[in-house]
Length: 373
Ligand SMILES: [Zn+2]
Image (cartoon, rainbow, N blue to C red; front, side, top):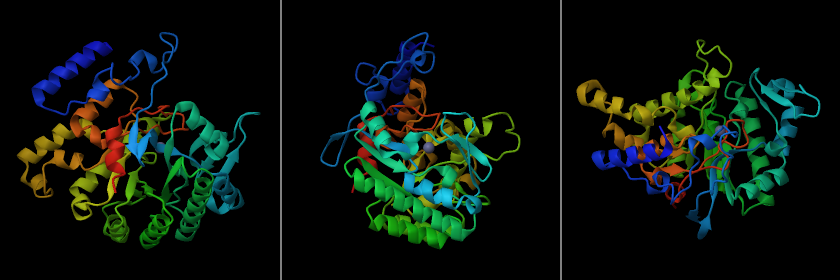
């Protein structure tokens, strides 16, 4: 299917169904989005420079990336000096290349200098036309399975390191904290500590190894998040489904699956009803959740047991989340936009990880509502 056929197809289906018309994503003349041939096959068509989206907030028009990671040098220093107890290894696999960082024996990644060198990080933002970053810790360093004392210490070290970066570039950076979810009261305290210092919220995984976020042990954390109207960026870790044994499948399909499980559990577990003020941002376009909303709706229509768990129809819950745009394909973004609306979609890149969309795509509407006071 060509891009133009796809756009016409979508316009027709929006007319038919009354779904949101996402002009900025659907109409190429208004919002340049890379055609599929630009998304990987450089030999077919050189990659076009994609104009980043404009975001109206902080009093002026600016561009923002809401899904972007860093590990400031001060956090790396903490990791090096606590390498044994944190289970961290720095492997120099190829001479002249950055080391591979492995924490807890899983999810190795190349520690590119742009992860930890602020000057390089800001230069990358400049080159991409990004004025501001909503900066997150990396999930490899959540330490949810470590001793709670270590998780608390690591979270504080990481958050202080991020605040150190922000001091050097206050006009460019907003921050999300990491919290020791394996000690929920401490996680609530760390969130409060971070918010008092001007951070915007926290990045959290789908839960700890054996508990999803709706587990009653996390109530103190949810109360703290709700009271302060924080942004909670729900970011998956690798799936541990033992069937995903082939190379990278725990990432390729496992990562979006983890988001899907956690988000569906938040909907059915009533957390979104009990704590409506926490602003939940879902990574990677919400995983598979938006794509399966029809199945949720059908289950809601035919099964009383499903209706009993929900105060509103499934689509209303889908509209309570925000979604980033780490989806690559124009058709996928158009679908997401049609289902949840442009005011729920924020530009995100996942930079500097290998599977990033750089620079991020997106529209201004979503970021305006995510950051609304
Ligand atoms: Zn990410």
